[in-house]
Image (cartoon, rainbow, N blue to C red; front, top):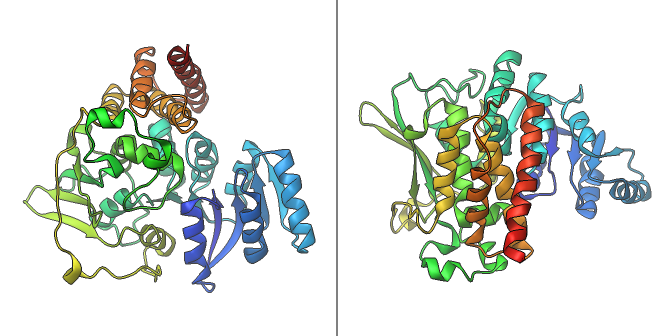
Length: 399
């Protein structure tokens, strides 16, 4: 029996996680659930799973949730705020943490769980983008099990030596095991066939209409700009211990091959499946065993083709910026991530154009020099300063 905390239980990953858990009541029990402001959905989850603790973003949200749970005679403790997130992820009764909060807000509770040696199911890529070195050091020191849940990194992990045995999870030590390169696949998003001129006029709703995956609005925009793939490149670097030049991106519109590993002997091992996040979630929850994820089987007889193409860096400059930040190192990936979060939010609020997202990130990066990311307080301070600088860039567009 695994005892689970779901950080971000009302988002796409969280909802899918609970769907898999629901199918295996003999294997999993839910101890903590968190959400920012989606109180009605969180209340329904608490009524069904009866966790010890539920965490929300504000006092008013906590009061609203308490009222709903009291009416349903549910005794779940309700807390709020960033510190409460860390309390949820570090409960003594929790041994498995699904880190599914989008953005920098997921870093601290995920890090605290890692320090305690819990099994981390990592869907919050920002934990590695912002604090890769110290996060992986915490994993190594505590002996925590780290299992990537992003479909691409989960696919890569499944293609690596000993991934499906109880070897302790990802350790960032695969560079010496005959791996030549990692091939991250990308759907290309909704604008793969758009021209640069067309991209200047796309709307938030268009950017959020992903052709293959159902995701939240922020990550959908990241997919459309291909910043999501850039963040995944940085994440892959820390998870698997390979330099930037051994991590490549291919456009694969069908989203059937989720990623591949090329070996020195000429072999290429790929993980295939339906574009359904319940597959990597079930893999992480059940590891090292395999459990039913409730996913439709892939029918090879219905596959018409598997198509691949190079990334157009003129249309998708965000990917190039991510490689640049990774190569520079230190705090630069933190700056990249923070500036992107601010820029995406401004785009969703229709304050800037789609094509200005990458421009905001580039101009913010230019305002920082490389310095070490050796301390969590330093990283969080750089995150906040980057947001201020990015807001300044956006104000320049609006004036």
